Length: 303
Length: 303
Image (cartoon, rainbow over all chains, first blue to last red):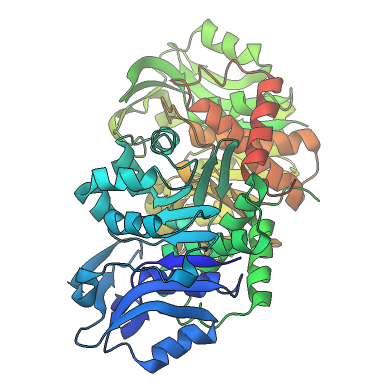
């Protein structure tokens, strides 16, 4: 089934204790699209780039069968740029520089041929733009939404309007505590689900993720990795694997959502093993299924 | 099968954001013994108390069928006392007061009738005393050991001698990083297992626990609780449930160790729901099996 993805496309300068990567392709929708592209060949991208977004970048997306007709190229502008440095523990980072460039005036236009997309993934952008996207599309089967502290604190009312129209909301633990005003994640989840999304995923970084539905809680472990080179995009890659699995199997029930969390976790575990999108642009389905099985094995308690 | 437990018995003054509890029964061996007592009726305790350890305290232990012949009562001394205050997030605490009292001269003597114990649990005490216990007993089926930063930093050589004779070592994540000198838990686990213990459990508090064996890694979630009143003793209670399940089933293989981690986690999840030992002194096996099933459900991804 088709997945419509809206979010940022960017060039990142990344420093970690293990090295650095300059001018590397990034942005939330890039990671989501690459990650979900292993599960379906109908991935459609809406975004904006500048003249510095070269043919080779489009070719990379096309090599994964990603439809880029929804990407607007502004010839007299520059693509969104972000620079950040990770601390020794890789759990915290400092933003060194943000240049919105063409992203400052992003006004998402969903091409006619995308408007019947069955799965919609709203990457981390201004909640007003997320709403604008929802206003342009026909009845999707499922709407997934990501956000960040910047919008929770800066546009809480707009975010709440978006959340009323979202099926699955993905957020990290500190964001959940801020949005709900409660430090306890179980209570947070109840408060946030009352804002609209029936299903909530709380990501806990190196400690895995929690899925809250009407039927209970699922706790997914994180993969115990020996080498983490770059956490950039891990959350978006998680979202891509999650929606990708649901679009592949077509049915949205608790068991498939639990498996989708593990596929998302598997994709994220690949993402952090190399800089930027390097690893998730060059996987094959066998590796992904192997990693998924390793995740199952991590929690197995039966013979 | 029989379990021999060595550790502290104490009276604690505990403050948390939800209230306080003064002069409450505590100590590592108290929590381990109460927790394991649900799985076998042969729990034997070695420790030391003062004259302030009253009949009612012995009666509480006896009510759980715990053999207290190994507890030495020093009539002209006072029992070990600890006072602590938990922060708002319940993950960090300040020690307000420590009075070793009779525990300062603790020289564990294992009664003759305990020396054939099949399972031995060395609670968090001076590693030299842990070694003295091992020197007094016959060939146990399994030796489990706990420790803390104080001994890792204060008596590293003595601790390493103990670890050479331990089968399963239980430690928390920050302690694992200090002992191994490596921030990555997978690498830490390899370094620590090379010190002797074939099996290592790294506890991650509210994020669950990791079990490392020759055959792989098991990741247990923590139970997503809405109300945590007092984390005191949760780690010892985990150890008690863990060794309790192994002593009950008698076989020590990867599957039973994985289940034992979940039983340990289940017991710890009860422990934090009330102050001190209040909850774990008054459970029944039905509740425990229900909580174990809830833990299974947390990780289930099959129909």
